[in-house]
Every structure is written in structure tokens, then in C-alpha cells.
Image (tube, rainbow, N blue to C red; front, side, top):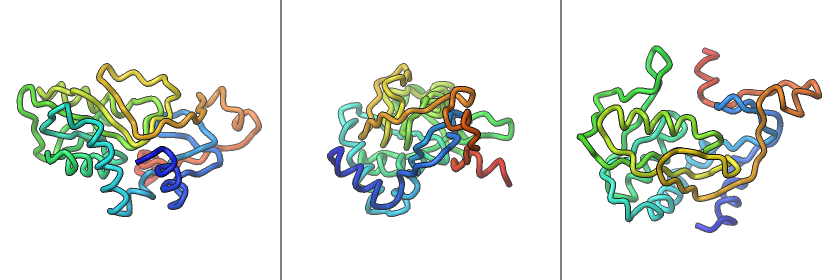
Amino acid sequence: MTRDEIIKLLETVGAIRTGHFELSSGRHSATYIQCALVLQHPQHAEKLGSAIAAMFKDHHVSCVASPALGGLIIGHEVARGLGVRAIFVERDRSGQMALRRGFELKPGEKTLVIEDVWTTGGSTRETIGVVEQEGGLAVASGAIIDRSGGRLELNVPAKALLELDVPSYEPDECPQCRAGDTASRPGSRFQRAQH
């Protein structure tokens, strides 16, 4: 998929939103990319997953691991494209990412970590940590969108289908907060916290 095709797809389903948002990373931005709106359509999820899988076919992984909830669907589709299994990590009662639900990794199992959107890469780094803690070997990481502005540091090779230069700010540096506007919290992590 080309850059223009991906952007058009995201725009068509309304996945690129403008306003004032607090991202899952805690940073603020005038742009929010809700990949769930594109991934709700299986044909789009499969197409994006196949495109990411093609970028990592030479890594010879046997597993794809993703952070729940954002990376779950795209991780599954990437695994389908690579012909391997898909697992996910999720927060336990203490709020730490953990491998649950009976998922296991074999010692040294080559694993690809997949996320929907990178801003700081925090959830991906946590997932890599869980993979390694459980004995697997995180060999690379991929995403649909990298909005980190080149600041992503994952300690494994990382590639995204689309790099977007979308500014984000610490809350005390956010121009919209300074103007008195309140950020909305659209991410799934925040939705859980409200219930």
C-alpha cells in the first residue's frame, strides 16, 4: 500500500480526527488517529496486516505479539499474513503488561511485536519486555502509523507503513491547554478507567 492509499483509507473511515486529545502516552495533540475505525472493517484490517507482514517476511518469526487493546487486531492480521500465531499482552491487576490467558513463548522464540500507532512507543517497549521476560526473542517491531517524529527508540528494528509528522506535547507545554482548552481522552486505556 502506498502512503496516499493509507491516508485516503484512514480519512474515508474517519480515523484521523482533529481537536484536543490526551493520548494514551499522556501527551497532548490536536490530531488523534483512531485505528479501530479502520480495523473494524475486516477487509481493511487484512490489507493493512498483509502490507506490514510483507515488510517483515525475512525475519522468519514464529509468533506475533501485540499490546491489547490497540495492537490486537492488526497483530492478528500481520500473523495471518506471515502464517504464524498471534498472542497479546494485557495489563494485569497491578497495571503491568503481562502474558495471560495461557499464552506461552518457547525459549528463544522469534517474535515480532506489532502495534497500531506509535507516539512514544511505550506500549511496544512494554510488550518487548514481556516477550523477553517470558523467554522469547523480540526480533523486530512494526506498526500501521509512526507519529513519533523520528524519536522512537525500541532497541529492535522498527518499521511502520506510514510515518506522520503529528506534533504532540507534554501537558504543561500544550498550546491548547495554555489557551484554556480541556483535552478529551479517546483512547481505550482511558475508557477502561472511566468504568
